Image 1 (cartoon, rainbow, N blue to C red):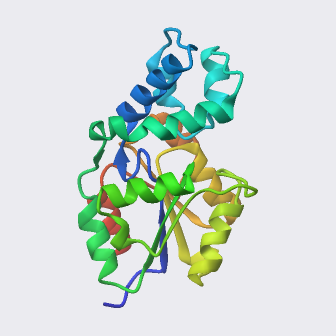
Image 2 (spheres, rainbow, N blue to C red):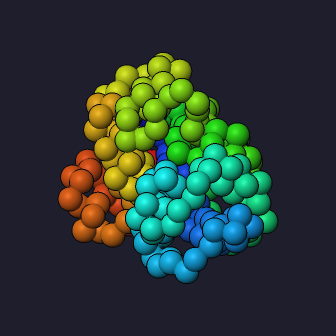
Image 3 (cartoon, rainbow, N blue to C red):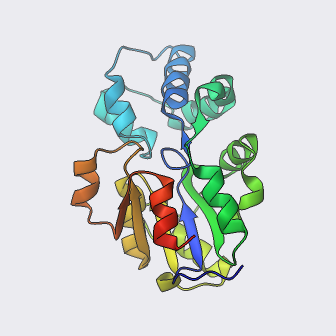
Length: 218
């Protein structure tokens, strides 16, 4: 089915947009710190509110000293799937992806998670069949909110920034869209407050995927 809207590509963030993974991230973080003998109690809501940022920034905010960040990230990835059952797909995700698959609109995932980890997570939730591209953190390429990872996807999909909509739940996603010259859609059910999202002035603000379907004319 040919799409009726102006967008030819929809790019989705992962955590807080397609999947509710905050409990998994928090539990994995705690366990990793404990395994490395670095754990101290912290405000979990600060971590929840910073999901999407690099751990370096998160630990600076939490005042936790992690001498070897690469070792931490490696261990974090190693045990992440021990806690994956705490994550789930948001309501309406599969419905909108099914509808998009029946059109000529292309889709992709853009996340700050490691590229291989992102692919495994998408596969775990049986969502891989819906996406043309899954892009996580790639060595040598800046991460959101820098425009480069989104520009890479746009180029590979063969569309223009004006034909692209970035959907996400944090400032990383909305600013990435603005920096790359695409439209942006903030979802309110992720890891940032409504007030924080409104201050970013996204092109669209939705409370659920049904509202996004209406915007896209699905």
